[in-house]
Length: 239
Image (cartoon, rainbow, N blue to C red; front, side, top):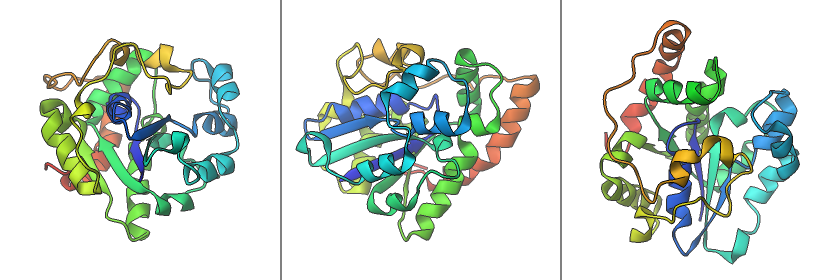
């Protein structure tokens, strides 16, 4: 089984990759379209040159690889994807051959977290519009995509992950609830910039507190992102 997990940044996505990577039957890949995205957009992200040199910059090759042989001959392959990487020119037809799951998080939390790492994000940086678009495209392919809210995972990891496994037809493994600290062998080269908290973790953090209060441009960005989040939220497994 190939599981494509779609989220924006700062959305529990790395912890989810570690969770699936802790299974003995599951290979993982970390944001395989990142280098292609940077090459195609010219955006200046932290460690840009290192990222460009660490992955294929050809989105067609990346897409072919994602439906090709699973690394290590494993029966399952968890693919961590960023929705904002799926710009025009990046193939999407391959998505019909994988199980698509959408990981959502309240945009106020995403914006507050992202802004600590990279200033002045805009809507296309945080992936909400693209996530809703990809959801509609997967539906048009004839799939019933699964949606899971990161808040539900943090509130009760076992309940949420059991529901996810059941929804996609994957046997439950309690190995998914913990992982060794220090990172994963398949982390992207950009991990030192973005993954500090999860590298210190050995499992999912507890429930989050009150929503952050945003001001100025960040509040305006929240207003832009909310309709896309609200579209996805009713489809969440534990809604």
